[in-house]
Length: 434
Image 1 (cartoon, rainbow, N blue to C red):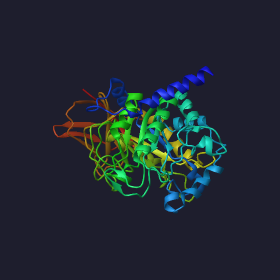
Image 2 (image 1 turned 120 degrees about the vertical axis):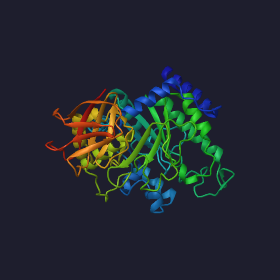
Image 3 (image 1 turned 135 degrees about the vertical axis):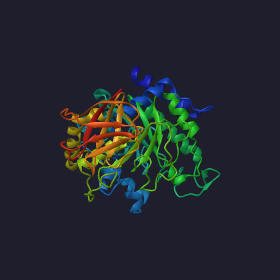
Image 4 (image 1 turned 30 degrees about the vertical axis):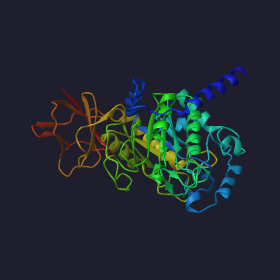
């Protein structure tokens, strides 16, 4: 009883902070700056989209795309019962793949909370026969295994009356909703996620783009998060340049600097830590008909190209409604994990090189050690690294340590590939510089 009262008092104390707004420019604390630096060193994360939409096997937008009435869609909660979910298995899957952090959907656009919230009965503990909190189990297992945990949180809600989806925005608010009520609801839920779940390291917002002209009260929301825990990293998938109070910048389905999806047209690369996210097939949530699985080579190339651009790579899977991860994902990521075991030093703890991407690949750097990732075989018997100012003292293949011939000129460094056994995935040349 004492423990329960203590937790209740702690929650109400935290909720009392939900009116906090940032005063003046956001100044990250020393703990926050340290968290940013560590985040940049992790490089590879697991994104998880999982919810009651998984039952229908048609992705996380199925309610919207199939025009399912909200009251009908809500019935899915009555038979969402993922008895085969095992937090330990999920975390071990991520670790085996070489991933250092997990970002999971705590609440998606359908408004269903995948955690035991007190702010709405529409949650996995109260509304399903499962009656357990998988995010609490996952948080405890991540803390035990040294995996960082971030929570995805949707700003958009298709069902709540106070959000009033589809309502015109007038003076920054939905004309037919109760915006103050919705903002308070979000702040209260975020307070729960930050104060009750152990070792949460980040909040990943999504949905801003549905109401670009709304007043989202980010000064209050970001201010509250940093008040509750200054070290927590805040990011927002708004497809814009970073907003005051954010701690990392994300890019959806594109590498930083690219805009093949059209999402990044208004998003110039800033000075914050960077992250790019992509799906392992073509879907975020479980999709039973989506067989467009990326190969281990494609995933490794995406990871390496992100690292060469100084960004983390967050790779998404959509677990099945029973809580299991399908074998196509586990098999492919086991191969990626084996590659990372052998080549991880060229990715983890590195920073993107100042050299822009080249036709043959990219470079990563860790102090006085540089790594040339040759992911496309050069047409000539060499690769050229332009604008190399540091003096190269040694060049070897990362795998095997075979010496590699090179010549340094004022315009750059020539790395000769003739006679080398080129790796079909990524030939990595490790350079030591003065």
